Image (cartoon, rainbow, N blue to C red; front, side, top):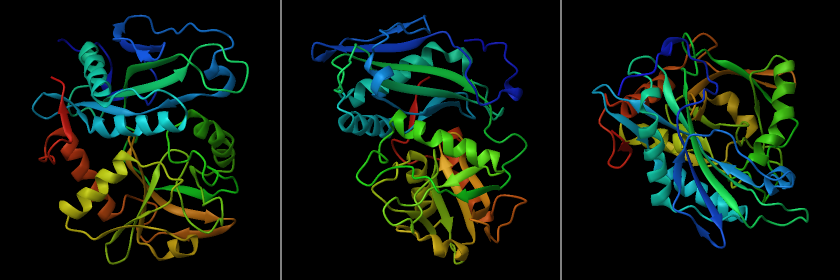
Length: 341
């Protein structure tokens, strides 16, 4: 299929309407068979549960054109499992894993002409999401739900290279103890909006959230997991029941151990020890890894030896290896790459 006439090299990270999207409705205790539709608009009651009580969850995945011209996606089964866990926590029906993966394949195939060409740095971002759609005025879960998937071509997260960012230790909490920090619920991100706007207004790129109970341990940012590198090249990520289990972070830890031969640790990371790390990064679907050059803790600057000029050497290797796996230049572990065409 011929590609759309898009300036692939100048795409930003934003929404562009594509041709098709997938929708399936839960009603009377069951999902319907689902279908691809043309209409990007959603019609619902003014009293829909999603509008009144934020009963909504979502995922983020990408599709790529590989070096040999295939269209693939990366570990969608893990996104399906995470969406299922989110649904259970939010009193929503689980969309089956096999149907989730099939819906991703259907939507990407239907929007094949929007998949950016290999080598442009751009990708097709895929957004599966689910929400309560029937009217609910008392505080209770919805009884009808929609599961939807749309796509949008996006440019590289870093134009001109990934420059290290400056983040601050936030006074706000991202999640409550025993709350919803471990699932991908829209309400978690709504809670982070004021904090990120405030951080930007103060000249910082992101927030470092601490554990809400003791405020001594590193958790994550509003939308990414932390990854640290020790001075002896051990990869460390924070462990907490409030952290979202990032597919990218889990994949990077596997790459570090099995491709690069590095030692890996998932453990509690205390704020007062981050000064001892050599490198720091934020990992997620959008950027793979964003390098962090500096953390500011209420006026006290913690600078990583990797510096503010470029991504550190170990994080660079991790990023290059994982993107090589995604783009087909490096052999992937079994089951990681799902071929769509």
